[in-house]
Length: 508
Ligand SMILES: Cc1cc2nc3c(=O)[nH]c(=O)nc-3n(C[C@H](O)[C@H](O)[C@H](O)COP(=O)(O)OP(=O)(O)OC[C@H]3O[C@@H](n4cnc5c(N)ncnc54)[C@H](O)[C@@H]3O)c2cc1C
Ligand code: FES
Image (cartoon, rainbow, N blue to C red; front, top):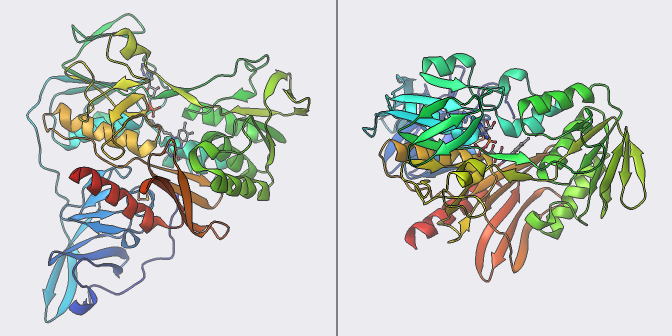
């Protein structure tokens, strides 16, 4: 998360700017009193909105105008220029809109407009149940209410915390640089105010798809009219002696994160098992807390399978610069008390062990209910499973990706949220296909890496820019076609690549 305390800068829009300074298709940031405002002209119309994204405060003027939307450069949230609505995650809250006037060849912003609630869409009613209080589940519930769904919403989560900003759990919050109140996606009151019956610590034990009924962990039954399964993924546990000790952790929930933070306060040395995103982000966060960190992983290069050799080597060097010690080509075979024993013969005392060796989608509910399964829960482009009225979204869903033309399943925050949003629209009867380009980001110290598209295999990789200077675009190609791009500090190119992929898919 970043914040900008410099105060408003740029032209004072209350005094007006020359019309010629804002050609069609352009946007600029400026100010009105203490407010930073984005002024844009698109197809001859003028728009003025808050200048910063409601997700992590990204500067919208550095993003893109696409049709009547503004796209955030950092994590690709989309806002409606006319209403300020956050139409695609990860931003969920609207931007403030301002009144704009053009007179005497000058453009002025006059005053804030009243916030308009999005128009109610769809005519569905009844009882909608969401299983899962994570990215997809929360985004779906929020979208249902945002679009005027007036029926009952029940959200069942076996977690003990209200939905949280999960990516933060391996980044700023774990590093101790984000306050506690950044973590919940909404305050506790929000659920009651929006009549969302959020039931925490509630396990859903089984699903009777035919009779549209759930059985909860306490054996009680719950009927639904429509259902969204958003059960996410769970960390793979290590099956080695000593893995069940209290200083050995996985990281998925806020409770997991708090337990790691508590031990990191006194830990001198941590062993991170697995050079995964979560493993490496945890390593960075623990270094920020002054803990000595050793990463042990069987691969030769961290994240090479996702990023290829050059970016992988860069990430390794970046962590080494910050003092992380790698033990690659090795694994931990036992944790004997505080001693981690390595396969290759080494051993290390560690007062904290974090296991980040991957996750498994939680598909058991769907599988036992007889829904179609294909290394995940199979859904169509409307996020509906093989049973009408039952939807799935997020880490569990395998969907027909319009961009790659393949059926894919990913574990990305933005994808999960957007799929939850799309599922919600379809549940209320607004047919909406999911056609966003897959997107994720990862943060290592002060280096953000954005990734758009999907490339499990590629023929060639080309790098434009300078990786060592942390200013580059890495393209993953099959033949002439770019499947995905990773980028560092080239946010606009990342956004443009996503838009190009979506346009290409729309024409196909
Ligand atoms: C620490 C961490 C950092 C991450 N960082 C990033 C990042 O930087 N960028 C990125 O793109 N992605 C990141 N991810 C991945 C991202 O968080 C996931 O892809 C996303 O949360 C998936 O959303 P989901 O709704 O499918 O599942 P989740 O968010 O995991 O939510 C699933 C919910 O279902 C509940 N549940 C499961 N089974 C049951 C049941 N039987 N009964 C009741 N409730 C149940 C769970 O308790 C949970 O509330 C990160 C993940 C973690 C753990
Ligand atoms: S800061 Fe705008 S999408 Fe994250």
